[in-house]
Each structure stands twice: as structure tokens, then as C-alpha cells.
Length: 276
Image (tube, rainbow, N blue to C red; front, side, top):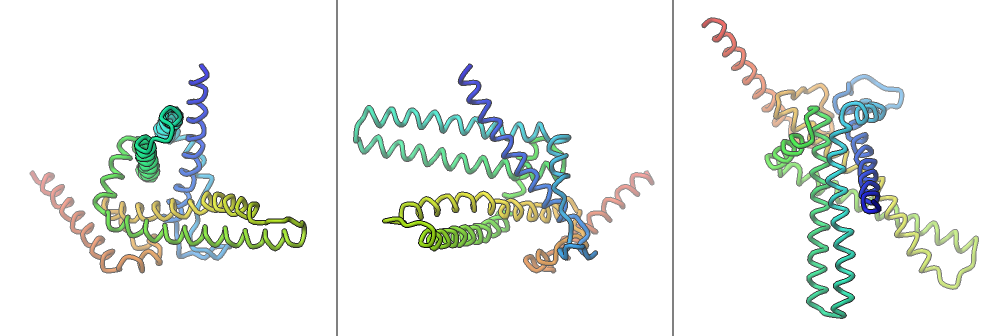
């Protein structure tokens, strides 16, 4: 019973994280498809609705989020069990280098697998929010979409990673410097290096949580744009101007012309079927 409670606790934590990520995703989707020509009170083009993501996560996609969080909870449980077994192995073998190398390789593989599942879940949530498909089909279709546009996704991920690292670094350094000057004025310590290290680590962790929203938003907007081209909904009105500059306008025009040709072919086929 105790182990079931531990797994349930992990599942609840993973579900809360999934809902939080889904709300950010829906906010990005509502902004992408909003009217960006009308001026708003805040001066920022387009509107994003956070309450819509909260409502959708409870009313329409609770099962999808529960399925994704279940997979994450299982992965977390596997990592916890492995850490317990690894400590027992290291304690029994002493300072055996082969055992430490094997445990380190397994720990690295599990960490990579954890990040892979997180990435698949996030893109599945994006696809599900766009198409209202189930979790399995959303995960499969989003994975295929990423493979077909691997260069674009890789480029955006690279830029996002650079910006995220720079932002987290400057936030952590600035917080540490402010803490250092405050410590000089308010308290007297013999060596400020230990508390400053703790402050730097905590500020890095908090900055990582907030900056992760940027990465989720970038993937959401990119998948919205690519899915527009894939399903033939590419409309020049709701595409952000910055995204038009990021991707060449000729590419957008070719996509729109391709969509028009496909629609004309479908109308001709339907007309021929009616004539027959």
C-alpha cells in the first residue's frame, strides 16, 4: 500500500506539471490564431487566454494529460528504483571502477530517456490542443511532424537553448551580485562564498522554471505554423510578422499556392463525381 501511495504521489506531481505546461501551450495557440492587426490596451499585438487552457485541461483533455503524466510517473519511479539499486551495488562493490562506470552509463541513459519522454509529451500536448486527438495519435503525429521538419525544429531548439542559457546565467549572476552587496551591508560573515553558491544554485533553479515557458512557447508557435502548412490552413492574416521574417515570405507564398492548387483539385474531383 505504501508503494502505491508513492506512485500515486509521483503521478499527481506529474499531472500538475502537465496541466501547467498545457496551459502555457494553449496560451501560445490562442495568441497565434488571434487577430494581431487590432490595437490592444496593453500595446502588444494579439491576445493569449490563460483561462482557456485551464478550462480545456479540465473539460476536454484531462485524459490526455493523465496518460502523459502516467508515463512520466513510471519513468520517475524507474529512476528512483535504479538509484536505490545503484547505491546498494556501489556499497557492495566498494570502489570498483567498473561498477561505477556501469552505474554512471545507466544513469546517463535514464536521464536521456527522461528528457526524450518529456519532449514527446510536450509536443503531444501541443498537437492535442490543436487537433483534439487522443494522446497516442497526437504523440505519433507530432513525432512524424518533427521528423518531416527536423531542420526547422532543430534550428528553433538551438536558438531557444542559447537564449535560455544566457537568460538563466544573467539572472543567476545578477541575483548573486545583489546578494553579495546586501550581505556586505546587512550582515558580517567571515566567508561569503558558501552562501553565495547556494544563492546562485537556487536562482538558477528558479530561473530555469520560468524560462522553460519560453521554450514551450517557441515549440508551440512553430508547430502551429508547420501544421498550418501541412493541413492547408496557412493564412497570412494570423501569422506573426516576426515569424514571417524568420521564415522567408516566399516559402509562405509557396505553401499558400500549394494549398490553393490542392483545393482546386479537390473541387474538380467533387464536380466530376457529381457529373458521373
